[in-house]
Image 1 (cartoon, one colour):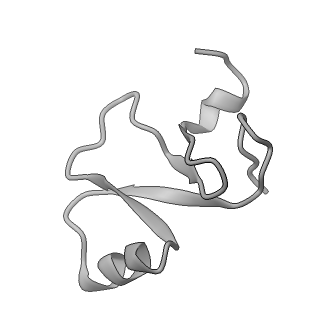
Image 2 (image 1 turned 180 degrees about the vertical axis):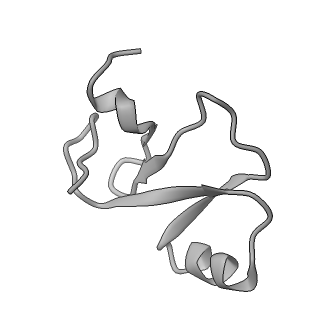
Length: 65
């Protein structure tokens, strides 16, 4: 289970990139995913904490920016 590197909450959702489908829009409205935009950059975040709003990459829990 992923945990937020900032607040340690386990209420983490995926940040999804690309053109959203209808289901993706519904999931984003239901706060099941976060839409990240049409292009994923190398340093774009992968996850968002629903508790504090912090966005982070998978490797952020191993390396400090």
